[in-house]
Length: 280
Ligand SMILES: NC(=O)C1=CN([C@@H]2O[C@H](COP(=O)(O)OP(=O)(O)OC[C@H]3O[C@@H](n4cnc5c(N)ncnc54)[C@H](OP(=O)(O)O)[C@@H]3O)[C@@H](O)[C@H]2O)C=CC1
Ligand SMILES: O=C(O)[C@@H]1CCC=N1
Image: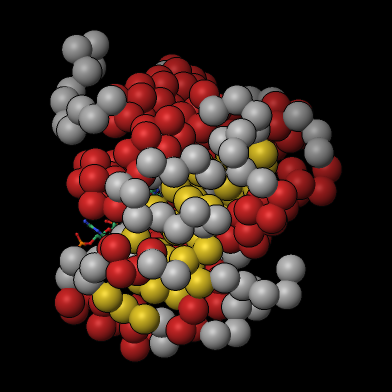
């Protein structure tokens, strides 16, 4: 596609900004085609100055001439935004929502607009290295699907699913996934400091160990258990550490954590704000 339409970004927070940056990095030559709308004047000023986009504080105004309307507000704010924009989305426009847990049906009903893409990106999208799982409503036409791909390509890799229930699962696995990875990184770095390395050296050792392991897996494409066995010498150091991790329930903790994220995502979709599940 040669021509980008105007794009409204409703909620220019962390992810909204990642999308704006990605679109500009990926060929949208005219920043003024982007209308970023959020409540904070300082934040708007910051986004306007950093990217040269229109920064406004009126969602209705932002969507007026839009060909794509990106919804990147928090799930807790979505109902207010949907009510604000009910009946205001231009007929040909595509609505592209990244709001966790909120279904296509809720968005479509809330806006009185049928062409909706629901997507779940993750934060590495900020450097074009994210992974986004997405799906669309039956009303999305070929041109709108092309527009969706334009937004998706600004974020990194993408996986299309034809069953929306995978979106809540993707939120738990890849959407929240960077948080688990960073916690693991942090724990490893702290362990290195505990042993006696400086924080700088420990960070370097951990970062390259993770990067190298991911690239090695990517190249070899062997099962991770095989690659783990390769590291694990009989009666050696890795076996001692792995024994301790298994004893501490490492795998179960990861699996239960991902389930907790999934359950929370489903709850968010039902409009439940913050509530500790009974079994936690
Ligand atoms: N962070 C992540 O890793 C991911 C997040 N998501 C989803 O993306 C969405 C945004 O998340 P994230 O960017 O982290 O959150 P942020 O809080 O950074 O961004 C939300 C933005 O929406 C703005 N906002 C609040 N109320 C309104 C309103 N009425 N109209 C317009 N804008 C409004 C906020 O402004 P203010 O700050 O002034 O309140 C803020 O700029 C969420 O739904 C989340 O589920 C999806 C994938 C990954
Ligand atoms: O924590 C959250 O709710 C959002 C959705 C996926 C990643 N961050």
